[in-house]
Image 1 (cartoon, protein in one colour):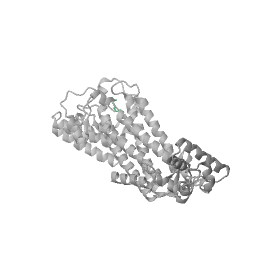
Image 2 (cartoon, rainbow, N blue to C red; image 1 turned 90 degrees about the horizontal axis):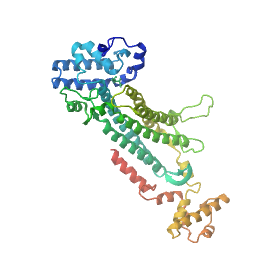
Image 3 (cartoon, rainbow, N blue to C red; image 1 turned 45 degrees about the vertical axis):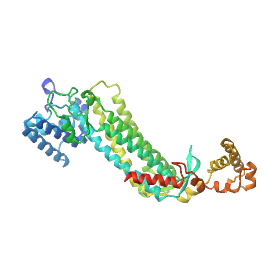
Length: 457
Ligand code: ARG
């Protein structure tokens, strides 16, 4: 097979070199974007009279035919042609003859591959943004369906204060909102058209880059040809934003796992999203949630792979950069499948409302309310904290709870305590009192839900 660079070479490429340097095995995934870019480029070459318009038309027709062939699974990708760009160009010349050899005028694979990756990520980022939005809507629906359900809020995984389950669920909505904003922001840097930078220096042909950008739906064109073929920041940023999203999903996954243990018994995940054991008949394992947690690791790895790949690379294009696609593809697939399965699994999680409600009041979860009660009656908060601590100690020693201690005994800790104290140590009342902006009171949580319902429609 004759290489495009054969003119300068006396010897053939070693078979091992072909096998070692090929990327078609993975970059064939970019075929649609490659053809889309080439069609826009050919139209521009014709419009600018850089090639005859009949040739441009023949190229467009040829490429459209190749696209149909690939779509139908009839196209044979060949490793000798190295990558997706040369595979398609060779097939084009096979189809339409000499005109096909004109497609690569005023273009290099260096700007071509940058274009393809940007087109790919533009599309995938938009898909991921919509998926995140779906997940947010789900959390909002769950929060609405479980309004009024109490649960223990945790710090250090120790029961801290009672909160509304809806409030906890809406916390995930906030994280996802930031994720969505980060992806949208990243999209601005992806949405830049590099074609026309050629190998690195631009071209002497009278090209029209704006026209190409417009055809492909880019909102900007790159400003420096050397940077445009060297730049993979947009991919690193995508991987970083994805890693943060996955970190959030892993925290959710961990809670689903923990909450479905016999020790917690807060939730049950439906049979459809759990698996059994091959030896222990009683088992029901949260494997989907565990894999969500586990898959987060590879997205961190992918970010590190790309950053390490780019570290210290001299300008402009270097072949190292061919390896950029593998981590990007893997993260795209991982993120989409993780968000996708969560959207299916979450509606099938049953919350054990009564268990959550009972535990919300256990473990002196309203001790802070007692301290705040004393502080509101004029005791400095630090003293109130200590007095309450003594009440808790008293209860622990006698294996009882604050609400079971009689008023007289409570008053021996502070004469500021009166009968209204019993309302304060009730978890439902405790939650109702936390009306500060963003707090856990039903009124505040409803406000959050209303705000996001409006924002997401
Ligand atoms: N397959 C290559 C890549 O993915 C395309 C660019 C090759 N450019 C070159 N000068 N060898 O990066």
